[in-house]
Image 1 (cartoon, rainbow, N blue to C red):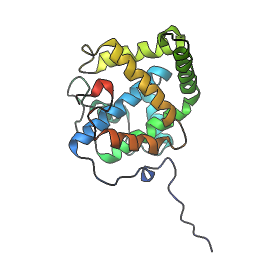
Image 2 (image 1 turned 45 degrees about the horizontal axis):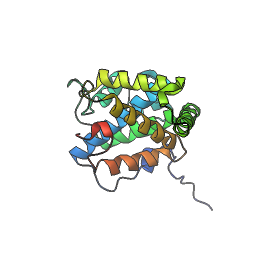
Image 3 (image 1 turned 90 degrees about the vertical axis):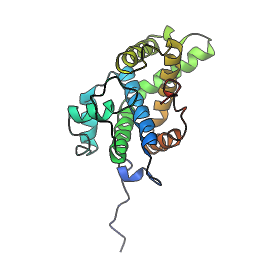
Length: 205
């Protein structure tokens, strides 16, 4: 008789490997990176807290991301954020929950992500600036404005650095929207957390 024990769902926290517990500095890097991934999704697809909370419900993660306040505190815990209103500590389970939420949303908006990346490749081939297309221009403007509004170094980071960061995140989103996106994002977070140069605009975090 075959076993009735099912393997973890691809959208389950148990599928995200944790060989070693991240130290506080690694968790700071993970917090910063996750907040930037969500910021990129906001800028590209226009999603907000309601969509993020609905994703938590879809994934049965309400115990970790229960409401707007809980979500705000998790995102405000990024060391890049202005102010000290959020909770500074983010535990590993909450980080893994945000990974699943980010990838769930990326998958929902995969068509927009693919279209944006295709346009980026087209602009590069034509040696034209990305902002010359409506989709990429709107994305870059939204990302730039939101970063400057929310992040502590927002008024000190050059527009060129922010553009490069936004475009790198856009390409990353393409991979995170795939079926194995959560595992890919989690492993990338863990790897980058060991290297201070996780993203151009957070090199000092």
